[in-house]
Length: 306
Image 1 (cartoon, rainbow, N blue to C red):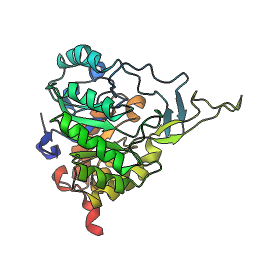
Image 2: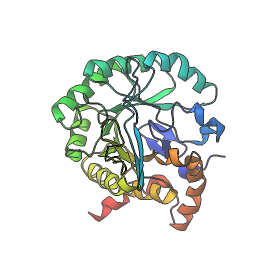
Image 3: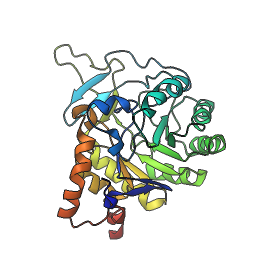
């Protein structure tokens, strides 16, 4: 049974709850049906997709660390045509809602080509534009407002789907980039992508990740993600999906206080595949504890103390 007090909106799209597994940690969704009914989710963000298949980065590309993990997957995926013709078919047999389609590319033309193909897919509710993956050399749209503006404008011409831009907190003024995204016509923001970290093998002195560094995610980045959501919520009116270090219902509430309309759960899915189900079930208890009637009423509560 759907709890109406958990409902939130991303623009015109109403979700049953704000819990969204993050891109890269939930595959194409149907894989998780062995654990629970994925239809209980608000939605989910599918694995990042490019116009052509990508093999990803060389191994090893995963390293555990304190309070999180480092990955350097490099956007491995079968390409958008295979996703549409195979992965979507499998997903539709077990999932009745729309999804967030995460896309990536090295050039504006790459992004546009993927968006045009996904524009025709009814299962896609939002296109999430990954301009901030730390594991792909060509993605430089995250720190240049002019380039980001060009990309968003091109995407808005290519698709009628809402465009959410996934920004980074690395080497950039994220509030400035959020403003640029809003002015360019973006429909929402996803904040934040992974940070950059590394691990070294104490027996050999060699970096564990083949590319030396990778995307750092997990509980340790939550304070940074909260700060970024808060700063962007202050300067834009765009709906924000908060991402970074969320592992329980209390984290969800805190992120929504900062200004997020919904949240994505990333690394914790790899630690506990049941985490999203557990959070959804625990939210009513935590809301009662914190005297919260409706989640939609708490978005941006921290901004009132400016």
